[in-house]
Image (tube, rainbow, N blue to C red):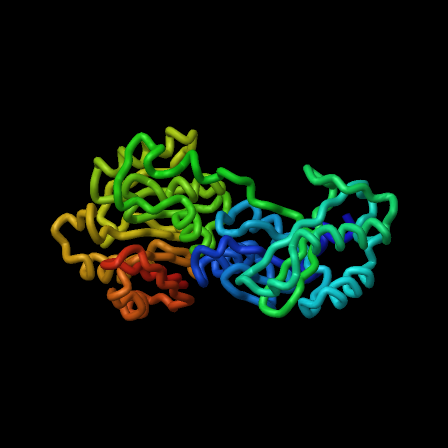
Length: 356
């Protein structure tokens, strides 16, 4: 396909779009950016809201995100943008080099999305039909095929604008269902759901075939997601019972943990770790084994930098009232970003991304 060459050199760039899952204002976009950074690719963001991210980057970023993210819906090449006006939309689509874009393809479909309830005067059904007719008129050899077409064009209405793109990757449905906490042999009420656990792994810029660690691994929710994307996942916990539970859960999914270490995270016996993501114990159903929660997190962050390779990232979840930023600075970390997520009336989590 002329508009998607994953073999292009890293310096080559196109304008890309990512339709995000949208359940949180900032986490999905942050996850996409972290995945791209972890792949060593540069990017320049153009548009970002809770459901849409556009940027200039190497097209290989699309494949990276499709392989690792659970917080995107689909992504692809942005072909054109204009105002959300029907006549202008038609002119914009007709002006595209559709013959070149569709080279070596025989079938196509047109899909649409509306972000934020905008442009209600424009019918999505009519828009798909009209854009499909324009493409067919421009390239008569193409046939419409609604299931598994060679090409899928995406029309997005957002703010006061229209985006016309070529969708190249779409997240399959049901990816997380088999790994839901209650589907595992050992369940614990405080374990992270798969989507959030995967997001934390990605925010830590974990990469396949590198060592990843969770120093408070519990029953292994975060370890599972790190292992799924190909990390050499090491679990550490002060409880032998938790380590055994983590091993059992990973084995259930045919995942091999790289190691299980019985140790206090405040005195870690590990080094040479590329990325860390962790959710220390707090709240209902969690045990700090007699240590004050804030003390546990502070002492851990004072020692965690010694585990990480220089330039490595750590993503930690903690209650919003915990002063993670000060603890991180004292421990030799730079604060990269933070995200607040309300869990329930008495708990708001702060996800902090730290860089050594």
